[in-house]
Length: 119
Image (cartoon, rainbow, N blue to C red; front, side, top):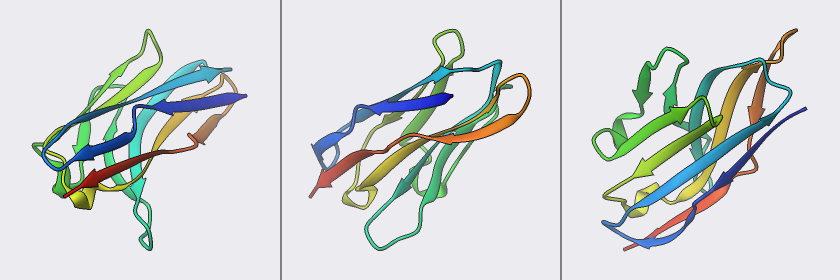
């Protein structure tokens, strides 16, 4: 069984910073892609940032230059540094991992962490 546990959400004023972290645990042979998604009230879940095992990164346009994704394969973690936060960044943020268990690939989600940016 594979689990993702997020931490680091909270309430911050516009212009502030938060750092989200996600730990991957369980029956893992390798971690392929890691990513962060978010879902605001009344909106669909959207990709925020993804990083592949080769280090290739992509961001949604609205966070480019403000957010930075990073991974530590030794610790099986992925982080999202969020700077210059805006009220429109308010959402539940979900960690996502594509892992290989040794027999199959699994697409796994965390439980989500709330980020609220006040104006």
